[in-house]
Length: 512
Image 1 (cartoon, one colour):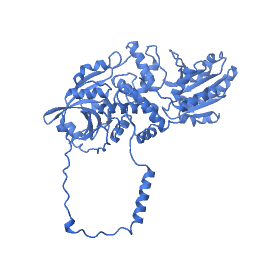
Image 2: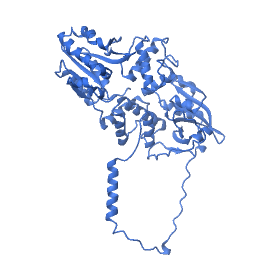
Image 3: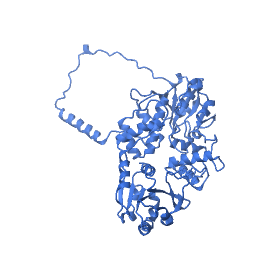
């Protein structure tokens, strides 16, 4: 079941946009990236499709175009920005009721707002129709000088509150694998709100990744280390530190107690010899060692399936079963750097004390690696891993609907429609259901590739398909903290200290 959550402020803004008497004027809806502006307009176009004309500003080659983005349209029409008002007058002149024209992603028009708004104020009234203009964009659009001179109406869509963030992430966990939901710590929710700046798509990915991690490790609460992994998976920093107010409070208390109690503290009398009783020595339990752990290939495959959200028994955890989950299972020999570039967890085969050990690699850095073994996470030194690894891997990745590792203009219509729908969801733009490979689809592919720091060639290959699934929360993500171009060698022996897990979390051991 798809998760859903309704925020309060977008509903109030929608009511004002539709019902407020501001005909002939310009309004600006602005807010942080991903805070839900396009979602608000999309919902509004569904409920008021007869009154709304929605367009999205895009780069098409070297020019800026406005593409029609109404929900019910199967074929979207593009208009050059400099002839926009002349071209759409035929759409509004016959309307008897008031029309609302919405320009989404209006930041692209920043350098052309003077002529664009001048045409609106001159041409539209001449047609004798009642029209409102709503520009939707970021805070930069609000600060545009061309807009401030015309005194528009400003509407700010603020990021959700901590309570709304928590409720939203709880609702979005249903997009992840089946299992018990994660209980998010209030401090972690607060950090997510600040780090994402209200980006709902990133918050959804955090919720789904947290659910995937919890299901894989059979936990219902995230430890501080798990929280760091989740934030790293979406490319956001995570620094757990006390607030400045708390530090000041500690300093004042320490100073007050130390100053006020100086006269009360006296040197103690020497203790008589006969009162010195030797304390019994307590032998600390030896921490477990990874060399004593056993894990066969089926145990590791079960863990790998769990990272994809599938609960399978060890007996059924075969590579050949991956096609039932619409996945491709491949194996072979490859370096850690090349495997990490795929961005997906994989099974590594290690040779420990002359017996094979299979582990799922969940995080890679220049100094250490996180291994998932028997539902426990171990952090091992990179030098130790490189010494014991046999170089063999098993990995799963999601293909296109036709089972191929790329989608091109020669692909069937079903694959092209699927690709366009996935890209449109990831980019927040209207989808095209024609099944034809268009220039617009190529631009969508390039834009997504640039966002994901891939080669922007317009050809959605294996890496693009993987990142596309990850961006929509439909695939696990390897936490890759490796420095680009690092040459791994034996001198990499330093380790990052492990954070202590709280009771009730999935156990994590440090390899010896």
